[in-house]
Length: 156
Picture 1 (cartoon, rainbow, N blue to C red):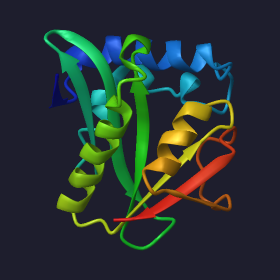
Picture 2 (picture 1 turned 180 degrees about the vertical axis):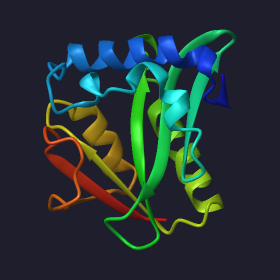
Picture 3 (picture 1 turned 60 degrees about the vertical axis):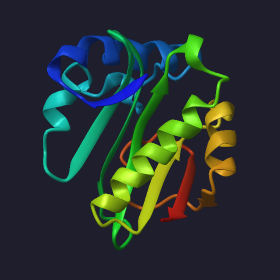
């Protein structure tokens, strides 16, 4: 498996993966990325210089994806965004590998902190974040997805 920068060729598979994961956890509701206008064309959004997204592929098959974007809520901070993993790849430590990978990309870009938001329905993700050193914080005022109800921050 290898990480690759998100390209338009992966947009459809990535959007399908994200929708599938959210639906499986009963988060196919307004206020989540499920209904974001640009979900079907994430490569457009992540082509901006203040963000990046990487897909994890096994040959030609999309296994998962993870991104980052500058976050104004804290100094020198980016937001870990859209960590999704194909169901068949879960339970093998790949989520931890994806987090380590995006943290390294964040450090390369000069960020000193990384923020993320998630939902209580995503208990496996919450476990991975805590085990990866993220600490829970109160809801920041600048939260974009109103349905998200668990927030984390980590010093890099």
